[in-house]
Image 1: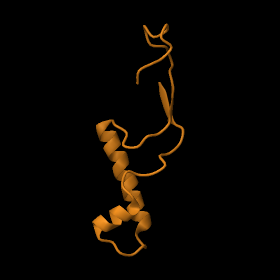
Image 2: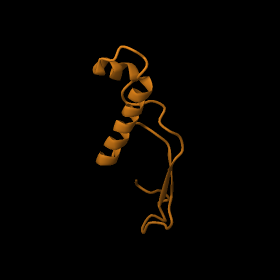
Image 3: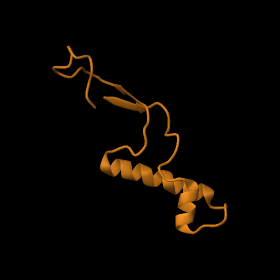
Image 4: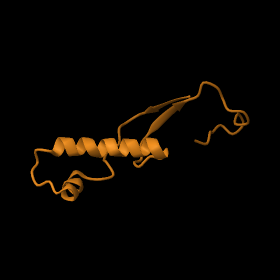
Length: 77
């Protein structure tokens, strides 16, 4: 089974301004770092829990068809 993400998530679950307020960062020089930390934290949480925090579109390609699903034509993920 191969799962491919068709498009990256449109927005992170925590906004840049919200994270900067929480971290008490007033300047904009650290925006790149804070954005990277938000994306990394989301990714690690999703890997650890097995749940997606943001809606996204995926494509799944099966190497073989699951037993008992040939007549239904759908697969539960």
